[in-house]
Image (cartoon, rainbow, N blue to C red; front, side):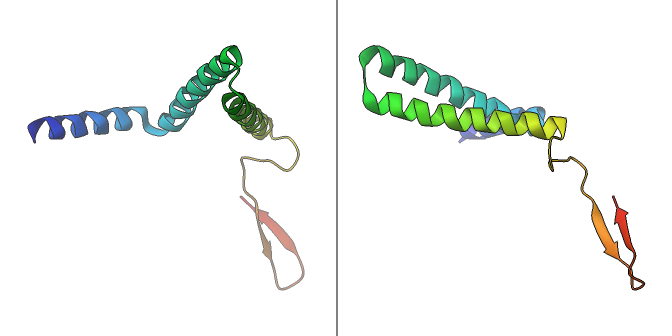
Length: 96
Protein backbone atom coordinates (compact mmCIF):
# COMPACT_ATOMS: atom_id res chain seq x y z
CA UNK A 1 0.00 0.00 0.00
CA UNK A 2 2.85 2.38 0.78
CA UNK A 3 4.36 2.02 -2.71
CA UNK A 4 1.00 2.68 -4.32
CA UNK A 5 0.57 5.87 -2.31
CA UNK A 6 4.09 7.02 -3.21
CA UNK A 7 3.51 6.34 -6.90
CA UNK A 8 0.18 8.19 -6.88
CA UNK A 9 1.73 11.16 -5.04
CA UNK A 10 4.61 11.24 -7.53
CA UNK A 11 2.16 11.07 -10.42
CA UNK A 12 0.14 13.93 -8.93
CA UNK A 13 3.30 16.01 -8.46
CA UNK A 14 4.30 15.46 -12.09
CA UNK A 15 0.88 16.42 -13.46
CA UNK A 16 0.69 19.45 -11.17
CA UNK A 17 4.16 20.52 -12.24
CA UNK A 18 3.35 20.14 -15.93
CA UNK A 19 0.02 21.94 -15.65
CA UNK A 20 -1.50 22.40 -19.06
CA UNK A 21 1.59 21.02 -20.80
CA UNK A 22 0.73 17.37 -20.19
CA UNK A 23 -1.48 17.07 -23.30
CA UNK A 24 1.15 18.27 -25.82
CA UNK A 25 3.82 16.14 -24.12
CA UNK A 26 1.55 13.09 -24.30
CA UNK A 27 0.69 13.84 -27.96
CA UNK A 28 4.39 14.14 -28.85
CA UNK A 29 5.12 10.86 -27.07
CA UNK A 30 2.34 9.11 -29.00
CA UNK A 31 3.62 10.70 -32.22
CA UNK A 32 7.12 9.34 -31.59
CA UNK A 33 5.72 5.84 -30.96
CA UNK A 34 3.62 5.96 -34.15
CA UNK A 35 6.61 7.18 -36.20
CA UNK A 36 8.71 4.27 -34.88
CA UNK A 37 5.92 1.82 -35.76
CA UNK A 38 5.58 3.44 -39.20
CA UNK A 39 9.30 3.07 -39.86
CA UNK A 40 9.20 -0.52 -38.64
CA UNK A 41 6.20 -1.20 -40.88
CA UNK A 42 7.99 0.31 -43.86
CA UNK A 43 11.17 -1.69 -43.30
CA UNK A 44 9.30 -4.95 -42.64
CA UNK A 45 6.58 -4.12 -45.18
CA UNK A 46 3.64 -4.49 -42.82
CA UNK A 47 0.62 -2.91 -44.56
CA UNK A 48 -1.33 -2.43 -41.32
CA UNK A 49 1.48 -0.35 -39.77
CA UNK A 50 1.96 1.65 -42.96
CA UNK A 51 -1.78 2.38 -43.20
CA UNK A 52 -1.95 3.34 -39.53
CA UNK A 53 1.02 5.65 -39.96
CA UNK A 54 -0.53 7.27 -43.04
CA UNK A 55 -3.79 7.95 -41.17
CA UNK A 56 -1.90 9.28 -38.15
CA UNK A 57 0.24 11.52 -40.38
CA UNK A 58 -2.86 13.05 -41.97
CA UNK A 59 -4.37 13.73 -38.52
CA UNK A 60 -1.08 15.11 -37.19
CA UNK A 61 -0.58 17.50 -40.12
CA UNK A 62 -4.23 18.62 -39.97
CA UNK A 63 -3.94 19.36 -36.25
CA UNK A 64 -0.69 21.30 -36.72
CA UNK A 65 -2.18 23.37 -39.56
CA UNK A 66 -5.15 24.17 -37.32
CA UNK A 67 -2.88 25.23 -34.45
CA UNK A 68 -0.80 27.43 -36.78
CA UNK A 69 -3.91 29.07 -38.25
CA UNK A 70 -5.37 29.57 -34.77
CA UNK A 71 -2.12 31.13 -33.56
CA UNK A 72 -1.95 33.47 -36.57
CA UNK A 73 -5.71 34.15 -36.27
CA UNK A 74 -6.26 33.24 -39.91
CA UNK A 75 -9.80 33.45 -41.24
CA UNK A 76 -12.49 33.32 -38.58
CA UNK A 77 -10.18 31.70 -36.04
CA UNK A 78 -9.62 34.14 -33.20
CA UNK A 79 -8.42 33.87 -29.62
CA UNK A 80 -10.82 36.66 -28.62
CA UNK A 81 -14.49 35.82 -28.30
CA UNK A 82 -16.89 38.60 -29.19
CA UNK A 83 -20.39 38.61 -27.81
CA UNK A 84 -22.97 40.72 -29.55
CA UNK A 85 -25.58 42.49 -27.51
CA UNK A 86 -28.68 43.53 -29.44
CA UNK A 87 -30.23 46.58 -27.88
CA UNK A 88 -33.95 47.26 -28.09
CA UNK A 89 -33.36 50.28 -30.37
CA UNK A 90 -31.85 48.09 -33.10
CA UNK A 91 -28.21 48.83 -32.29
CA UNK A 92 -25.69 46.03 -32.03
CA UNK A 93 -22.79 46.33 -29.57
CA UNK A 94 -19.71 44.06 -29.63
CA UNK A 95 -18.48 43.16 -26.15
CA UNK A 96 -15.29 41.26 -25.37
